[in-house]
Amino acid sequence: MSCNTPINAGQAHYVREAAVHALNKWVTTGVASAPAPRLRIDTSGATPAFVLDANGNVEGGIRTPSVDAPVATLSGLGQEGSFYCTLFCTTVPFSAEKLSELCPTHARFVASWSASTAAAVTGGYIRPADASKLVKAAARSSVGS
Image 1: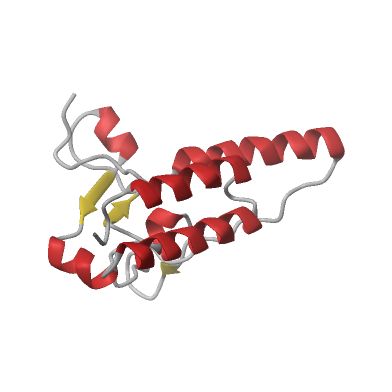
Image 2: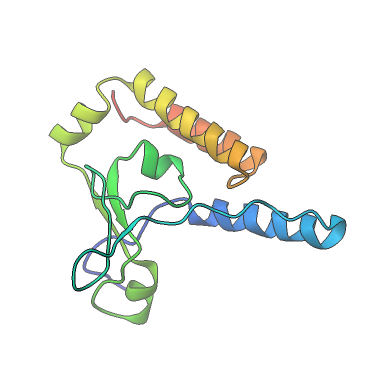
């Protein structure tokens, strides 16, 4: 199966794992998690549209390291092609110039990624066990090198 653009490489699976964990906690203890923040939507025009940040990612919502310390623009809007491509949306990697502007050093990238990961854990959107995997992956990456 081939899509026109790479599929969304965000950490949605980690967020789903945290959601299942929170649901289990709610069912077994009666303690519900806090509501998640909503994506920002501009309703001033004829058609509502997501509010995008300087990197092309939607503002608001549950934040993961791939959105807060991005190396690409991630979209939850489907792409042309098969159902699979439509379902899993898109990732558009940044140019080398933009990446070096955002992540001038590897240490800075890892620090930003780690801070975003910690915030997601605090918010209950990523489990601590998954957070350690994300931080290790950032440390092993070549971003900012």
